[in-house]
Image (tube, rainbow, N blue to C red; front, top):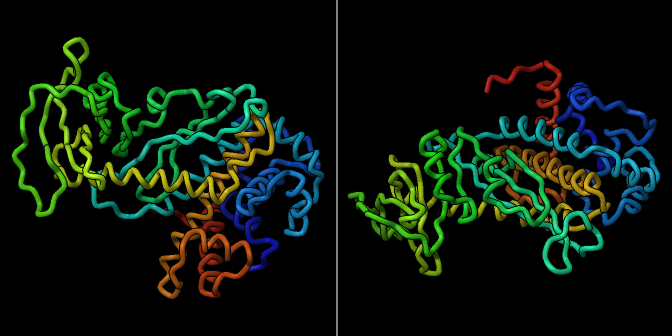
Length: 378
């Protein structure tokens, strides 16, 4: 696989020109630029994320040597500011939907887990005056619903840094999944509403929350279990209390501190509930990996369009690379390697031959699927 065309070819195979044109029509966007088209902008932004290029000038200087259309950095900057970031977000959603379906594994649970959380990128307040955060800092936030089953984001909501997680969490709801969230996503009204409407959940409770009229659930505990409580109760003060009884599971974490979680799930063990909450760490690992490996903290522009175009392109890079790594790892002849190691070798065109063959196979399969030469029965 030629290193000058690797990522560019992969992007084209996983998002066809027809799919892109459909998105542009959806937003009634007409291409006017001859060279700096949306395809070109996306290619530069995705390559910038994967290669950790530090500026648009850097990207323009080296892009041509990697087979990208030669453009001036000032043209990239101008079009990045003008391009409605909702278009790039829609491209991301199409890619995420497609690759999540393709990467899905068989879950042992009735429903898969959807971890919900947010991450904040901060800079000096003069850089993003429209996104003031705390003190001398400005910040923008990505609220993400992350599928533990596929290790990929499913829903993404963008806000400024001061937006609270709880209210935005409503936009991440999905009844197909069990929502797993930290304390910020719990509210008395919300859990009652979820119980009435079939949205399963596992949320951590604040340490000082009142638990009233406890009724123990008599269940056999497995040997060595860290669960110390499993009961139903009403939650809150007499002035503000849940209308329904809810199940609460209490367990000890690795620091021997008590963690209390509330859940709608009644037909799983307390240990399984504790394990679901612990799996929330996967989304933390996802945020850390994206920040460390996809150049996210280095913002190329200062306008809302420029910032979110860059961030959504970084997420496109993540889902594409994660899909290739996960499915490449399934090859019986492929030597196991870490995600970061895979990315490094891919960009250096130094992947082992069996990995190259597997990526060609995946890329060709996706190209045929996207162009209607194959049908997805999954």
